[in-house]
Image (cartoon, rainbow, N blue to C red; front, side, top):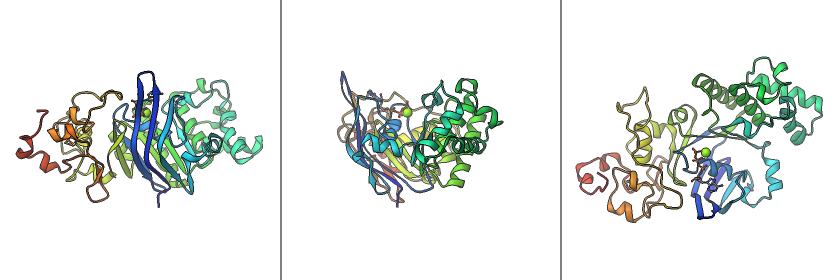
Amino acid sequence: MPLLEIKNLRTFFRTKRGIVKAVNDVSYSLEPGKTLGIVGESGSGKSVSAMSILRLLDENGYIESGEIHFEDRELTKLSMDELYHIRGNAISVIFQEPMTSLNPVFTVERQLSEPFIIHQGMNKKQARENALKMLYDVQIPNPEAVIRQYPHQLSGGMRQRVMIAMALACRPKILIADEPTTALDVTIQAQILRLMNELQEEKGTSIIFITHDLGVINEMADDVAVMYCGQVVEKAGARIIFDDCRMSHPYTEGLMFSIPRIDSVHEKIEPIPGVVPHPLALPKGCKFAPRCKYCTRKCMEEEPALTDAGNGQLIRCFYPEKEVRRSAEHKKITVNQ
Ligand SMILES: Nc1ncnc2c1ncn2[C@@H]1O[C@H](COP(=O)(O)OP(=O)(O)OP(=O)(O)O)[C@@H](O)[C@H]1O
Ligand code: SF4
Ligand SMILES: [Mg+2]
């Protein structure tokens, strides 16, 4: 049974120019102890879908409809106060930019002790001991010195580790990691990913890992949701996505071709043509139609549903079979050549 299940979530934003449907009918689930990777280009709704779980939305944002089940609770029905108790306790978040969650005017000790004091009722001394232990766990060199420092005195990689320590302080059941390593250089990125994997093995934490980098998803995820224009366009086990299988969504295929992979069967790097459409001017039929080389008239008129292609693989495309859409027959009906 999934630990977390999001069903038909719609999260919208009120803007002067109209309602932005940032997340439009998204469903995904997270299994205990597993990592769900969410991938897609900028603006596809990765962050908004995950931040809806704890309702960490900008003021103009709201959940229009849908359900978010976590254990025996439906999170969209809870008050902000109730959600506050879940945040940082049962579910925590690591943001892309550590300074969005680290307070520049407080020491690492003060910030790292807080979850222990607030959520676990510890006194200051117990909280400090636990904070120190967390710094050891995330392999910070010289934790005794670091705990007395302020965020600005630390390097980017160290700040990210402190944030991971904070997020893991209460042994959350779910960790939402939103592009946790994008701002870091490659060596530190690899160290942090390894660390998250180790912590997951040790503590059994389930992770929602958001990134635009398929290479990172390949390393981290058990299951993958590919998002485009506020929708899930493909969902499957990571091995199904990465082992050149018979079915796929053309957008996933495009993402695969656009990254260099040592193990890739494709030699050429081929970026996806065009840009993500503006959220207030989405195409009528399939949202990917203007950029899809397999697009037909039908795709421009009708919107495909997310459909089971077997193996637990869900694909939102009229032509999920690679061989069919690459055939000469299909070429005759495409419109984007
Ligand atoms: N406060 C807001 N008001 C209006 N639109 C918003 C707001 N916040 C997000 N959006 C829109 O919602 C859509 C989804 O945004 P989201 O941040 O989830 O994208 P993302 O996939 O996480 O992208 P990135 O890779 O850049 O982080 C975007 O079109 C974005 O412009
Ligand atoms: S439905 Fe058509 S346009 Fe959309 S992804 Fe599939 S082939 Fe491309
Ligand atoms: Mg984002």
